[in-house]
Image 1 (cartoon, rainbow, N blue to C red):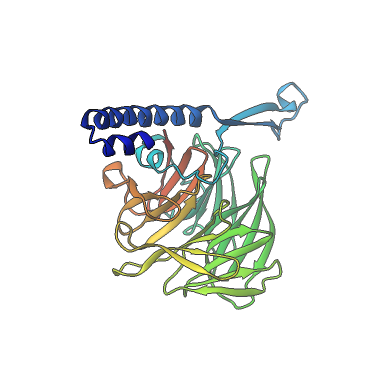
Image 2: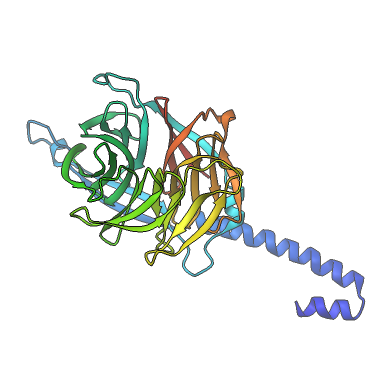
Length: 349
């Protein structure tokens, strides 16, 4: 900067051009270094995975060691690397159907959750079920839900929760040894139908059909955090800022489609109707980037945490019809259409 100021003061055009070219080279070098660091800055997760249901105690029955590697977030306050967000590419790495032999109706997805153990939980509204698959498409288990299951959230590594309507409430489900089992049911004290759900600080946050977002205790006592003007089909927790991100099912211009809601009931508009219309699923990655399913705009959108940088990840040209739910797992994500059986697994690179 000092050299640039000196060159301008001396009216030295040649030095100014040289400094500009040097600056360009430094920026490109820095970008390459950041990309290399992002690819090498990994966390290693080692698990002992026990295989159940084997009749004899052979070597396989003792289970196996599973080693997973995931990219880690850079330390510091300036981690939302917008150039990486805009330049990263998407490729589909898997696709399978969620329809099972016991289904009596065509599937209608309400929510999806990509677990850290690389298993996928899907809620099927038509058949009133939760279904468990591997991310390779192998069907593992299913659980019948009393009511219509909608959005899903992670409670801990072995526990998920699903928002339910008719009757309204929350079902807490254990995911252990590739099996689903009901742990508890929470009925809403106000009788509201639940659609969106997330979990933070030991409490559930749910979105209702009339646009209300409530904090819910384990015994079902609901406290209104904010009243939006349309159904909140999906919620997610931003681990960086501690806020709840809310998708609001709006289509008319000028209406809010993504909002931030803090524990002290402050709310901030992140995105209005435009690139996205009538959104459903929403999720956030480790860097605070937001992913939204535009059900009537027929796209999946990625944006920076403040909504200032937005791009379409998937469009109808990628086979997307009416995207309803999305879930992030490291550099991979799953997305599913509401009235179509295939579930897609994609990777950012």
